[in-house]
Length: 231
Image 1: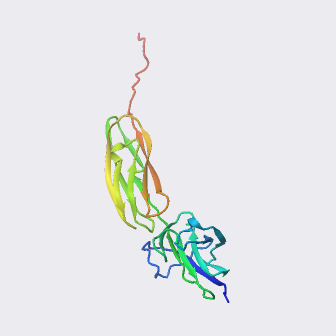
Image 2 (image 1 turned 180 degrees about the vertical axis):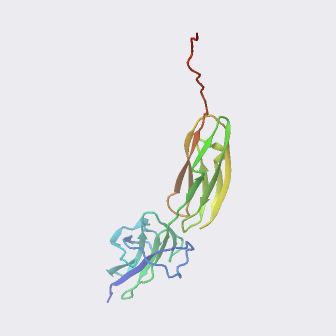
Image 3 (image 1 turned 180 degrees about the horizontal axis):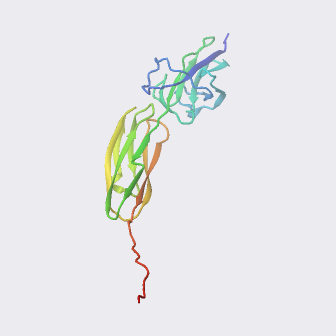
């Protein structure tokens, strides 16, 4: 007789972003996982339909029970702020194909997700300048997330000399440079922004601002009284 079985796995936080499924990473709770039918057995849910939906437990685990033998695809939705770094079934596309045999559970269908992030600092926070001075800024960009970022770009609308294309930035990598604006005649506050692209998922961004205060020194002298009458 044909016996049903279970399909299970775990969604884990790939804290070092290395995509190594053997690492003892902790689980991510509350992640949506959907089981699709796979009529042609190609590992692509496009030809199937959703059968069961669940969310991961506090340990990141999920299970679909009482599943009829056949071909299926497990599809995970990356939680907010995360991007996928690995699945047990390549390629890394948040999909795992499963062929379920009668009475034999399919386990270890795991997903790894990481949190990409980036930070920018523009210093000094405040500068005091006089007419036609040159202001100098230091821009520091840090990959504070768990994945390598590509297309890292800095934009600074009021100080175009601070615009920079950095390119790739590895996890924990830091890059810093100076830039300037000459002939300052008014005070201003401007914001530098940085964007970076993780391997999967949305672009990450950060901003920081710096203020330039304009000093226009002046002095006045008054001698009084304007008129005096003497005998």
